[in-house]
Each structure stands twice: as structure tokens, then as C-alpha cells.
Amino acid sequence: MTVNAAQPGAAAVTPGDGEIHYLVLADRAVPYLLARVHWPDVAQAISAGYPDWLDDIGLFDLPYDPNAVPVSFTQAASVAAAWGRKLGTEPAANVPSFIRRMPANWSDMTPGERRAFGLEPADRRRLPVRRLRRIRASQATISALAPVAALGNGHASGSAPAPESDVAERRHQVRVRVDGRGHIRSGQSTVSAALVDLSEGGMSCVLPDAPLIRTPGQELGGPFLLEGEAAGSRICIAAPGWISWILDSSSGTHFGVTFGDLNGGEVEGVHRFQVTAGSRRGQR
Image 1: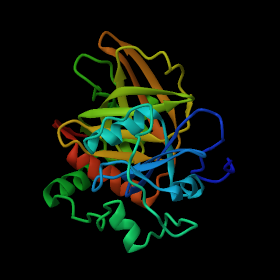
Image 2: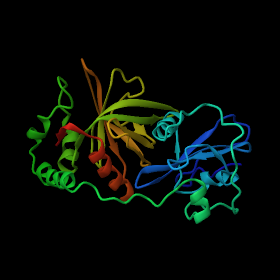
Image 3: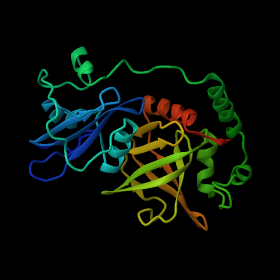
């Protein structure tokens, strides 16, 4: 079984390769289903509403769905942890099975399929009005900042300011300081870095060292899995990205990531993450 690599969101699933593939489905960038698939013997998934593994042969169709996002083991483990599950390297044994219609349509699940996976209607509560207004006010303020003023804002206590290459983006996007971690895919590896700030256009991170973060312009295929510390919120941004700048300092390696184009749901997901994971240090 193989998947056309040219199809958006597609993940290669090959019999006998020994590798379990992890995929998520997300609503407004918030993961609501995590699956692990290996043809022809592993097809299991969990969700926030049903955090126990469930066998479903329909999951073999999931890699073909354009809305499915392939994630690394580290990223999948972060999603599972949010639902109270420690992700093991081996599939669960003797788990219940779900018998469904075939072929599976993961973009239009039936009520019975949604109930089986504990998928309640998406939470569409509005963002806190006061914080949302503050973010929007910052949008206008940041747009008017002069380059010198923007350069005066360091990324962390005692660290050097952001390079001028990042200033233009800062003047057009609301950057909010956030507390959490970003799990960033770089080739076949995943880098887990402390988050510093986040906007629709990108984020700033810091690592004690960055062996996989080499040069500005380095492409990152995505997705980006971001987890907040205090609220435990997570978003999965499927867009690609690249390293925009790097600064080494005594506090570690600071670097910026610029995102590719986000869809409307991902933009809303970023706004929600800014609110739920926003640091008390404020925004800029």
C-alpha cells in the first residue's frame, strides 16, 4: 500500500518497512484525532473524548485524506500526552475494534463514527474578548513601529535583539510572548525548543544548542506542533517553514522560524494559542 507523495498531506505507508506512521486530524489547528498506521497490521486511533486505543481498518484510508497531517513520533507523543496517554513505540494489543462503512471518509464522518471515537461537536467558544482586543490593538501599534524600536525588543533576558531581517515581519504580525515548546521537524529528526513568541507569520525559539538548526534559509518541511505550558493547549500547523535568523548567546541558540501560508483555520488556531499560552511577560 502506498500513497501518492504529491498529494497534500499524504504520508507514505509501505508494507514491510517496519515503521509506524502517525497522523493527526485537526480543527482550527487543534488536534482532535491521533492515529498510528502500518499496513497491514496496525490501524489504531485515540481522541480527547476516547483516549483508549481503538482498532479501525478504515484508518488505512486516512493517509489518503488531504486533511490528515503526518507527524513525527515526538509530535504524536505530545498530542497523546495532552489526552493522558503515554505513547509507546509498539501498538496496543487486545484493543476493541470498530466496524465501519467502507471506504472510510474522514472528511465527512457519520454520527456513529464520531460517537465511536468520542468526537463531540467542535468547541467553538469565542476567545476572551479583553485579550482578543489587546491583540488587535497591538496589531495597529506594531504596524507603526519604526525598525529601530522593533530592534530594541530582545527575545529573552540578556539575549541579543532580533536581526533586521525579522523586523519587517514583526511590523505586520502581532507577536505574543508565549510559554511552551515547539516540536519542529527537520528532515527525519524532530527538534524540541522552548517557545519565546508567536505570530501568524512565525515564531522565535531558543535551544541550549542547535545541532539541527544550521543556517538561515534552512527549509523546514513542517508540520509544527506547539504545546503551551500552563494551559496544556496544543496546535498543529501543517504549513512548511524555514529558518529566518540565528543568534548564539550565553543563554543558548536563539532562532526565528517563518511559516509558509496558513489557512484560515490555522490562523484562528494561532490566535487561540496566543491567548491560552500567552506569557505574563506580555506581547509586542
